[in-house]
Image 1 (cartoon, helix red, strand yellow):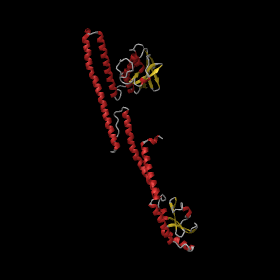
Image 2 (cartoon, one colour):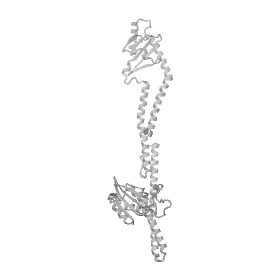
Image 3 (cartoon, one colour):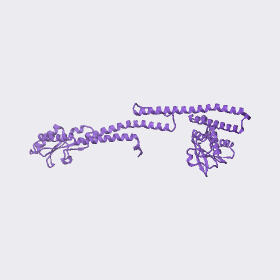
Image 4 (cartoon, one colour):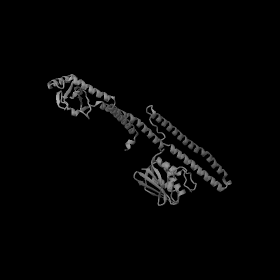
Length: 420
């Protein structure tokens, strides 16, 4: 069962098993050790004392009955005297079982009943005394014996150990949850430090490591954003220089230079947007958006693009969703083949945007990586920034949705789902 894989169950069962072994070992040592021999010796000594205290074996029965009564009052016990054949000679107090019900394997052992102990003592002359102390009735819970009390102590220790074990493993489970949340991308997660033991020190180390990772990631994002921002200045100067060249430069070279600058400018813009999406905790602006109308507006800028579907209203940032649709259309234009089909449909709890083209499709091996930054398919033309589809996934997930790529009738189809 899965519950036995839990750490607290393993630790707790180890404690209980150890207590059980301790009880069994104590019982074995008691039975085989010098204590058992001492008890046997005490039984034989008591038998000799009782022989001297009782009337002689050959004495008349009234005399033997008188001796039993006197001894019963003296030791405050129910007492019964039996001959060597098990016949009752005299008794005092409440009835007692015959000797053959008290003996156990021929040893001088005791016979237990609820809340009482009956003892059998053989006398040197062959007679047998069976007795039960009247003190037994005055002690609540009597009858448990040494090993019964030992078992109760073990049970109490087991019950007391459970909250300690569970408290320790609860802290470990909370630490595990924190590690999983950090691994999932929540850099703000911290775990509560409880106590001053090794688990508390591990929690403190985790918090320090998580804080350091958060600082490094923030510094990385800040460096990337600042570097991208600083690149804008030389780009602006390059544009101004090209404009100053005017007719003096070779038109083809000038056009190529302008194209390079445009691509570099787009790359910087997408790096800045990606950094901002990573840094933001929530969308800056959320408003109702007609998803079909937004898709139609963007598709109007691309020839050979058809839009169909059902009007669907989604909640989100119109500027970011517009960028998402534009990147999907730009990807279809560059890496696919016309015509491009855009469809907006409604599914239970989701608005679905599908962008497909008539290109060769996407290999199965590339589908898992196509949304990675700067990934390029083998043999693909080195056009674009390599961040377009990565931004699509970032924007989709910031809106609580996701995007996947499918192959439908040997055609590549990007399917975006947003909550509705």
